[in-house]
Length: 224
Image (cartoon, rainbow, N blue to C red):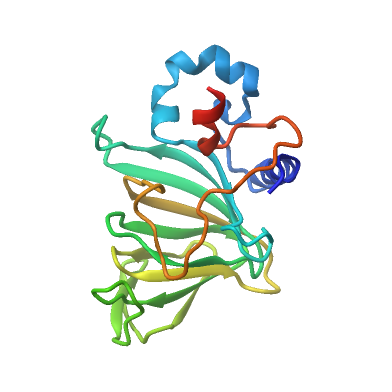
C-alpha cells in the first residue's frame, strides 16, 4: 500500500468516527513532530501498539480484503498488569477480514452502529484446520449451537463472544452500509496470536510516497 492511500483512508475514518459520535484520544491526531516531542511520556502507547492500525492483508485491494482499526487500550503481560484491550474498527460492505483464530485472546465483537456485520464461524482441529463439528457460541450472553460455516449477522447493539480457537471471518452485509465495530478482549498481541487459515500479511508493506498523516502502531519502531 502507498502512504498516500493510507493517509486518505485514515482521514476518511476520522470523518466517519466523528459522524458516528465516537471520540478518539487526543494523541490519535498527533503528527510526526508531536510524536517525537512527546514520545518520552508515551511508553504504554508505543510498547503496547495502541493507535491506528490498517492492513490489506497483502491482498493489494483494501476494499475487498482489508481492515482499519484503532486500538484504544491494551495491556502487555511482560510489562504491566492490565489484562484487557479495546479496539474500534470500520468494516465496509463485503470488505473481508480473512478466516482466523487466536490461541490466547478471547474477545467480544460488538456492532456499535451503522450497517450489519456478518461473521462466519468454524471450530478448529488440533492441527489448526477447520473442524466439521458443531459448536456453541454466545450472542449477548445467549447460547447458540452452530453448524460449521454458519453465518451470524450482528445488527447494531448486538455482540458475540469468540473464544480461543474459534475460526472467524467477517464483513459488512451488502446493502446495509459500513459498520462501526467494537472489540473488547483480553490482552491483544497481533505479532504472535493470529492463526490465519491461509497465509496473509497482517501488517502492510508501505511505499513511502509521502509523510504519514498519523503514525500507525506498526510505524513507531521506524519513526520514533
